Every structure is written in C-alpha cells, then in structure tokens.
Image (cartoon, rainbow, N blue to C red):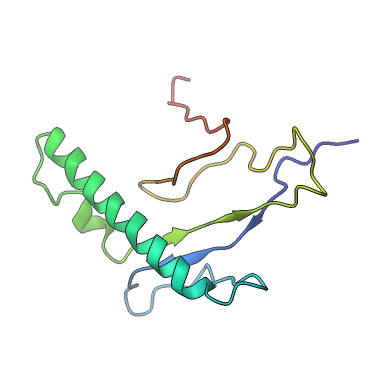
Length: 125
C-alpha cells in the first residue's frame, strides 16, 4: 500500500485586511458542526498574526534595522490561519498528516504542538 503523505484537512481562514483588488486565492472554509467557527478563527488568528508582527519587529531591531523594516511590508499580506483536521479512525498511528512542504509566507507561527515531528531545514540542511 502506498503511504499517504498529506492525510489532513486544511481549513484556511484569512486574517486582516487585504488591499483593494488583491486576489482571493484562499476562500474561507467552515467545517460542519462548528457554530462559533468564525468567532474562534478570528480571535485566535488575530492573536497569532499580531505575534508575527511583534516577532518581525524584534528581528529588525536585532539586525540593527529600523523597527518597522519588516512589519511595514507585512501589512495587507495574505495572512492565513490554517488549522488542520485529521481523521484518526481512517489514518492510524504512524500516519503522516503534513509531509514535506513549504510555507507560503515571510513568517510562519504555530500554536503549541502536542506531537513531535515539526522540523525546519536551513538551505545547508
């Protein structure tokens, strides 16, 4: 049997304002059975998004650049909250829920992971 390297559902949720005429490549996805999905995604998403702006400002200061060097360029970006759903009855122990992939943005932030497996590679491995 060929292994499945991406056995997850992804529920993209845009966070923040987009410039007029910007493409809408990621329509919001609301899974069935979550009456307060919009409220929770907006609350959690804005907290994570604000944290990325703070990290970008800290990185700029650490590099000896003006504080808003990166964060000003992030304004109006395609900021996405992308919670993952997994069917543990269909995909058992040892399943790969998010195989090798690239993230799409300048900065990626995660909530606390309950399971091992998140690895980051530099260009020189």
